[in-house]
Length: 341
Image (cartoon, rainbow, N blue to C red; front, side, top):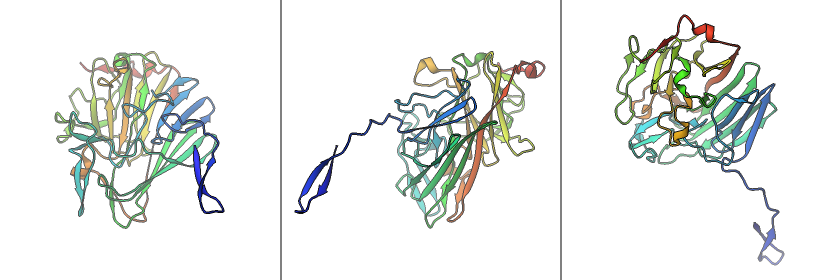
């Protein structure tokens, strides 16, 4: 590629620039490691592309030279999930987002999934990236987000810091979209536990229609449950929290020696469970499960349900992560397991 410059005569001349290696489709790759854990985060979208322990995938990711599909490992902001008709109002401003789920006429998963994020800092076991979103028709406020991925002996933790550099309060929601790996087995023989008392039923456009108590329904996953033929693309709330304030969703793949736990702090009031029945790639269907921590439900920019108001000069903080319990966990389920028909 040639760079233009001006010589002594004032005329523009060309200077040869050494060729740069081509970028993969997911941008620069930032690898972090701790012990036998390894994770890769991409420049495009600050996406969690892979997370392995002892060489075995904990999440189902994609290759560096792929465009991320089905939101694998992506950050969903400034709204998670769906926004009906892509339109909303907050204060005296209105937003109109592109319809990127045309079959349901929704705008889905925010605006930052394919932005180039800047690396702030990196060490062997963590990296921090940031992105600044300029006011635009889809979101007429300034937004700045930093995401830190860190590996420790406890597993993977992800920290969010969000703020508005502008002069006006901005509406905000965020979610994450990791698919936990089944080791390429079907989900039918896997187990799940979701400590939630409330489910959000949806209409034919996947927009919530109120809330229902899960008691006595197929959606009650508060005890470890064999997934069987359950098909879920379902949001839960009313999350039970442990003494440390974290809610923990537990997943055990078929024949696994490791139980996987997705934990989230009190900023995440919702979790979406998606059994991957409708992925575009048919060979991937029901071979992974998305457990998606969300600060607000679908369509929150319209309804303002649990929307976060970012005030100028104040930061929003949130944390979630993935941990593993080693060893055979089958005994934990022997007396409590049940199956949803």
